[in-house]
Amino acid sequence: MMRLTHNRVAGIRVLALGVLLAMVMAAGMVLAAKPAHASTTFYVNSTEDHADANLEGDTCDTGYTVDRDGDDGQEEAECTLRAAINQANYTSGADTIKFAIPGSGVKTIEVGESDLGGLPTITDQVTIDGYTQPGASPNTKAVGNDAVLKVELNGAAVSGGNGLDISGTNSTVKGLVINHWRKAG
Image (cartoon, rainbow, N blue to C red; front, top):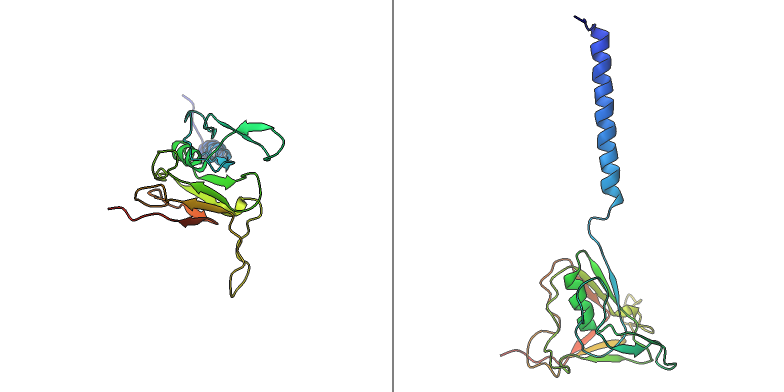
């Protein structure tokens, strides 16, 4: 029978503790390397009010196309605000909706014109940033306001309801003009 000395037992314990510590550190590195949630950025490039054609995957695409810069005929998949909200609700994680609608001036999205009613309720964390539309900018003054807003949500065609209904937590909406919604009821 083999007899373990006090020094040998202590050495085995230190070795076991070292192996355990290495395993915990390796597991921590693997977990830290992966994001807790996927997040996707969607770029609204149209003022139309079409829904997303296919929620599978993480691509905002209504099935229509738009002229990429408004004047040269280069087409790209259409992504509307409604379709971007559809996708943001469908994909997990904190998503972002940015704007890149071709042309100058204020871009008005006539919500409800497509007979789809009000915009979908936002059910997952999202940031909708109207300041990303070319030419838009947030307020920089301590007193007064020099913000430039370039995206308008017009709800005149919706027979009632909210401009944006948000049931998800930790969402942010900024840089949008939201008007002409009629009170439901």
